[in-house]
Length: 252
Image (cartoon, rainbow, N blue to C red):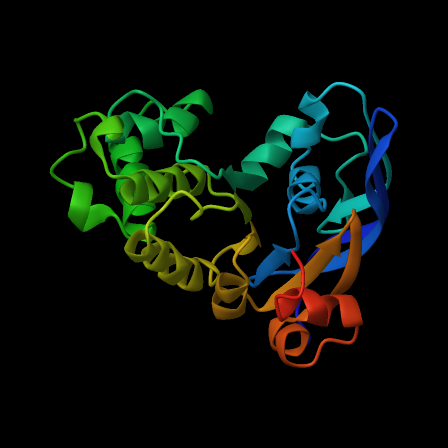
């Protein structure tokens, strides 16, 4: 059975003022897979990631040309951007829990959507924390500040906070770069579980991480996608010499 395509990115150009950060990007992102964006710093990985939920709209003087469709709907057309960002959740490089209790961190989004019923909120909070593999560690600390959690726990809490909004896609911008190896391994295991329910797109500086956790990989260089496809093919049999040079550590 062919994989369902979640996002289609077609001929995407992005400019910050006069600087072109993305050049004619063409890529498809499959549903219920982990897709990794790899490449040296400043090559456009995070910029493309932020195109998928229109976070670049928040930056002045950004110009975008080309098309990005989510389930065949043009996300740069006449759509509700808040709704898009609910559907396409995001987890950032540094854990950024709100300065409130663990419970309120998770309940914040659903409350903003008008859910006030305590029983319903309890269910959402528990389900989201269970799904983010954090329940056993925080179930007795739900009413304590989220800022008291370790870095790895805070990052899983941020994943739980994204899950609470029932997204279809979770974008992760180097979600383990601030974490130690044990916390990193937990988040990687979590992604393996989460992809059964969500489509995951991750930007990572770690090629080992991309090789371990992703189904598909796209390699970026100077704003262009040099090569994309199944991770195993990119890592074992790259078609482009530049991909091979990057993966074998000749540059980057």
